[in-house]
Image (cartoon, rainbow, N blue to C red):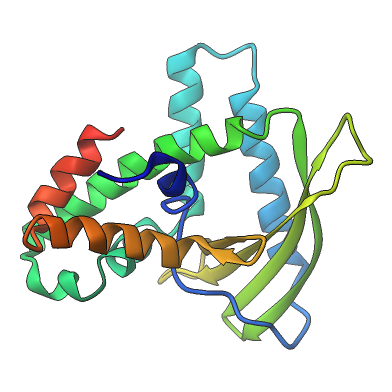
Length: 201
């Protein structure tokens, strides 16, 4: 069974390990991260929304922010090529639904804190890294947690998050390791993995 504490920071994400970037990124990429993170916190902390409304709005925001299918297939690694198209579609949906609940829990863990973008850089024309700090709004003397977001456009050119790195740890890499471990325990069955993820929501 997955270690929930590890998976909480594994599925939040996401595509591949961030490397030291070389050039300045577009301010639009930084704004993309800052604005969407702020929107997420506003939804989760809203007292005007009912719980179902809050979850529905957060899900819509998150699914528009994260490259869900790309992330899910990366997490499967070589097992993706062994699955049928139907099995892959079922897995992507299970992965997507499960990750939404984990993102929600993850952000709730930082209630009372905020994200502050501190800079950005480009790995390539279509591959940027945005650096930020998670800071305590009430205790400015607390040491902030460093976080980096890998941002790439999808097939339509819309910016999406493909990885998150907390204090140098890539969530994409952890997610892939965790899911590979589960697959090995269940004879590489993608269908069984989907069932397990649905059960952990």
